[in-house]
Length: 291
Image 1 (cartoon, helix red, strand yellow):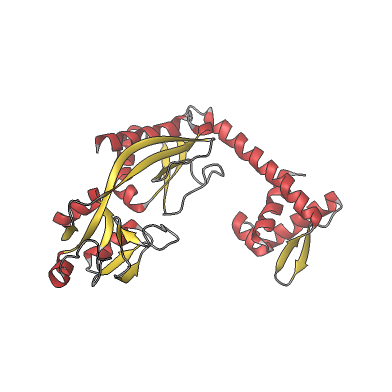
Image 2 (cartoon, rainbow, N blue to C red):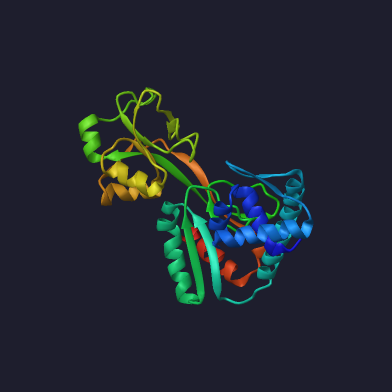
């Protein structure tokens, strides 16, 4: 099985349509159809049933999918290993983190990195979703969860804390909540369950059972803006919220209460010795050590 055809086959298998596969691979739909036909002819087997709802793999298609997946894993491993022996301080490094992490730690680190190594180009993706480093969705990730995959290297960066904040205008209007009441009589801004199941039910260890949910947000920056705008109470990292007390008119609710969390730098073991990846990782580590 030719790898070029195999990757097109896998895209169809995963998307269920020629159009979905074409969009994923960024090629035209006609090319996808031709390559699938060529693959089926070379294997002398029909790999999909064409149904009104999409392309459904035949038994032969399922066998082909298993073989093609092994080819994909081998190609990805070879690419990582080739990158792992690259000693040039130039090229692209893909970095994944949340938007608050990027603003407060990564951008200053990357600015200093650029002064030292201007030929390294960083592609920074901000999301609350965990990227798959094994599939090379990113080269480096900064996470709050330590991975358990054996092919990933995790470096502890720093222990941070979160606390509850609200705007001064909100506190003036609604007062401070009483601990242990489930935030009765108050509005809250929370993360949806898809982002954090725990934070969809509580803020900084306090149940929100008796609160009214004013808004659900999917990123830390929007959380900060919503609290500043007076939508209600919400949870922020203390290094963000405490700075916001001076700059953005936030108030820290229950100053004695905070919840710890850890930050981890994660990269694939095959890329650990790639010079440009190592340079970006070292810049991030230095930023957290200086904070």
